Length: 256
Ligand code: PGA
Image (cartoon, rainbow, N blue to C red; front, top):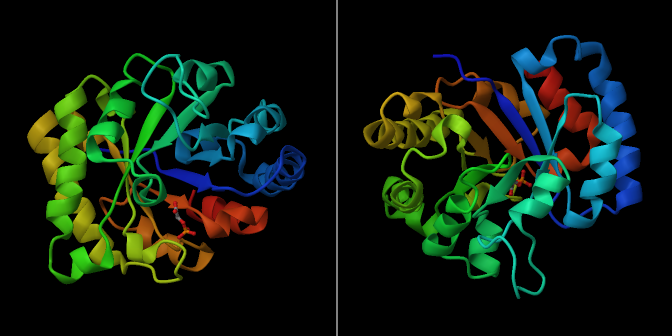
């Protein structure tokens, strides 16, 4: 089973539209020597804040590099001040959207049911969800990692079943590794990915083997290769290091 590796840059709340355009120029320059058949070897997406989506989308046009958003509301439209719908992301040409990032869960109170509703809201959309799951340090220390990520994934599978097919992407991001410089070892990450894979296959059969599982949490050029070498690590979700176009390009090109 070959799964196309996927690297996603999560800029979080960084970069204006102008800064995004400058980034895109530099990033395209760095990717150019590898561009030939890149889309058959390695998929790359960038998730800027909402205000920079349009500008970045234009700056990436024709490059094969994909646009991603950081959040979406489950409803198609309505009185939801401050929120963004899937139709708006479709109109901007987003290929992916992050759903249930731990910062959304921890800082903005998103629970499993709300995250599942968001993923369900993307059934039939051209925008594909990247469902983020991950445990806190306390949960890891009491050996509850697989129980926690299994629950987070299970709620979503209960809501959507196989309706998204292999368009669903899962990202395992241990919360204790996000922005801390502490990466899970490749062995430790692979063990959790294998646990997630088992649950996906249990619930979805063959589709579960096609769904990509990304790793996120202090990924940088120096550790991306050893993570991506593991059998169930199908890509990376990169925060801090992705703000530097040279570093993100190195992660993509050195592993393509
Ligand atoms: P980090 O963030 O690479 O800065 O740890 C990853 C993420 O939160 O997606």
